[in-house]
Image 1 (cartoon, rainbow, N blue to C red):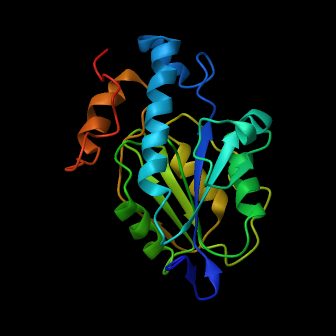
Image 2 (image 1 turned 90 degrees about the vertical axis):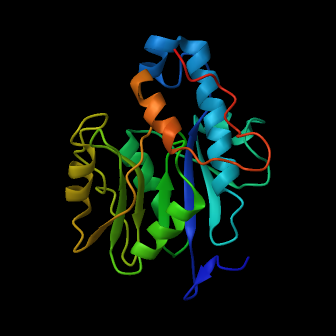
Amino acid sequence: MAGTIENGRTRWLIIFVKEPRPGRVKSRLATDLGTVRAARWYRQQSLAVIGRLGSDPRWKTVLAVTPDNEGLRSQIWPAHLPRIGQGAGCLGARMARVMRRLSPGPALIVGSDTPGATPRHVEQAFGLLGNHDAVFGPSPDGGYWLVGLRRSRAISARTFRNVRWSSKHALADSAISLNCRSIGTAVQLHDVDTVRDLAPARAEAPVFRSGPAPLPFRWSS
């Protein structure tokens, strides 16, 4: 695939996804929308992100699924994309595990709940890894929708340890855990955790000029 190999190393894009079962995804969003509507939104949004990012020939896309057994055999996700299980533990442990499993090359992890994420943003983040050991795509709430590592050295099991997840400290704590000499900053985008995130995230979503946008969910609460 053209553009996938750079200096003999694969460019990896890992999209983290969770089986969109009511009551098991987007708990904070479900507080306002209900479990069924929150799961429906997450399923539609995840498939939209995968559709935009997953077929670009400039990188090799992998779906990191959870729960492992259910996700690996799920018929929800596109069959043409390879899948790996995230495994057990907190988000940081799962991200470090997935990073360690891939063959050499720069790797980006993106969430599946960021409507504004586009191939242009992914390419920019890969470009930043040309000059930095790591890259973050920040979110306004102090977290991040994207994290990438050049992976010029082995990924430690302690990577992403001691991070206060789902807080305003998540990005800062993660950056400290990496112990990198240089960290680049990609575009800031909203990921959706609560109903208040829906409107600004929708405003960032790309406009598809040919055919309807792949976001049929009604954004109003």
